[in-house]
Length: 214
Image (cartoon, rainbow, N blue to C red; front, side, top):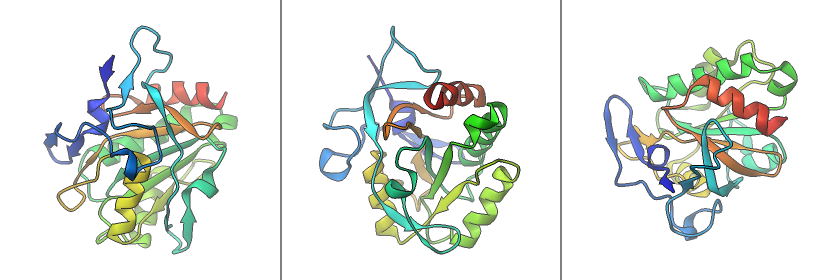
């Protein structure tokens, strides 16, 4: 079994990284996969283009503020719906815009009937900078011609940290600039059986969207 250290570790946007945080949050802090061991990917029986999660992550429960200023209950709003969840910040120079661009390209390349079922949620790790208005403007650069707009979420620091713990990713550090590169894909069963990191491509995401949505 291979450890999913690439996505679960903290990636410092701008060139630094840390593998010390490779293990996900402890069981007491998140309601995704159970136990304290790092997530693993399956080797020989790999069925996804992304990372197969041997222990699926459950769709987390948290409430933050969306780009309109309204409360957004992630679990309630996305329950039963294919959902891509990513944590990052709008001033990130590399990983975040690349990931959002790859998601957008993937959604444009799949059948429109698939794309219209997928919700993309971007949670800021830098809530002091990323207001609802800033998030709305930022995500508008990527989703303008897509059938479903991206959802940007922010809140106070404590709420943002609780969202990360609930999702099972390590807490961002350095004022949110060192954050997980993990992009989770939840299916209609409210579990993420596959995830992606910065090594995956838009084609990988598109391939797995067809599998999960289809």
